[in-house]
Length: 245
Image 1 (cartoon, rainbow, N blue to C red):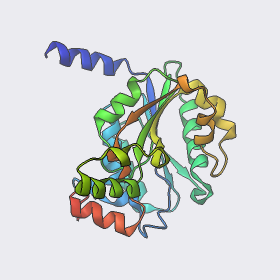
Image 2: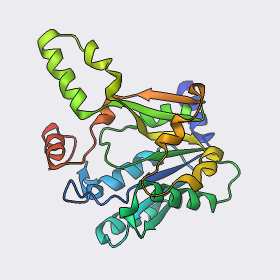
Image 3: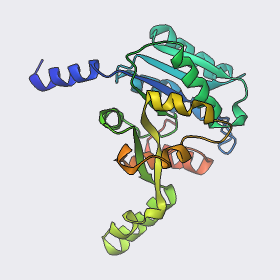
Image 4: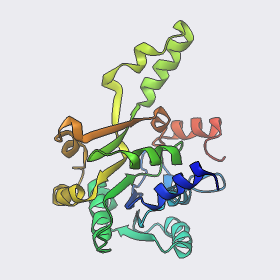
């Protein structure tokens, strides 16, 4: 093993973090469970779980919707292989993402591990998410290190401008189109403090905005703009080869 590889491996082993994968959405706009879209020959929920396993977390909590046999079956098979994977069923998935997050926090708390100091929170539909980005989030020192990217619409404008002017700067600097969100890494104690305030659709965004600027880090990655919420976005992703046909 090279010195750089050994250093990287040691740094990974010292990562005292857990992961919450929010996968209980009902995908109403898409018309089919996004968790069961396929990438590289396996369901997206399984692909994303394997991705976070590479960060060597102490626990991976996956929140899935009730009464979805295929989703449960896909992730149960993986959980049987990896003891760190824990499955939580959200009995009321239509109440909002915050409830799923709260269930994930409660599950991590049951581990009673004093060595967990950060929690990585993510969804399953940012299909170009990679290990490098997750590693960058976990390497941040701020209380919250979130992902920063542009919306699909903004990227389309950027591509048009690039063709016309060969200059992406105007679109890239439109702060109104900036998204600061998932995936993100957050201090575990801070997350526990906020747990009681997570109700329905009231998620982390407003709580994070209330933090001092020096406690919020960001990792830019416009590839995260390509999430899958509509049939049109799904068709584009398949056309690009990002998802299986």
